[in-house]
Length: 241
Image (cartoon, rainbow, N blue to C red; front, side, top):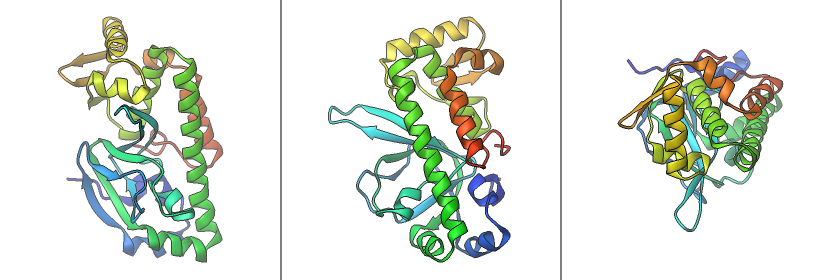
């Protein structure tokens, strides 16, 4: 059965009982299929998404057709905060990376609650700040660290948010997400497989040794987790995803 427990989502879990009661009647359960485009750059933000088991990738698309990921959102947060707190226009393209369940709420409803309730608005602001921190860290990581460290960081983040060790991911997609060539990811993935850290076959990847993958990653993975803790809500891993 698809998950519809709202407390799987850290944003909803962090609300006061009164704030949760105000938003709960407006939540709509949906299933998000792999590859679904939730919002395009420049579009008006009509819906906010609160993933439960799905994972959403926020990507920037370049003129040459290349894509690179700037952040991931799963059960740790909410997609649509910038459109609620500021101009209701999407700044990036949001696409479903890992299929799963989510809850929808109209952005206009969130905007009204934020205008009426300072505590609710502050909660939205913290999640926006955390997303900004994650995007900053991704830029620094992609500019400075090895392909192995970047791939390890990204796989661990996907694992945290999805609660899974096995995903449907191609080498081409992973290369796009961390901003490198496919053959670079192929080389690193083969080395990790030889070391029995991951298992990769026919577009499926499985993490078989989390401890060793943690050793392979850089400080960016831990930095993002610490920032989420500082902003007083858990990452997907800590919220039980």
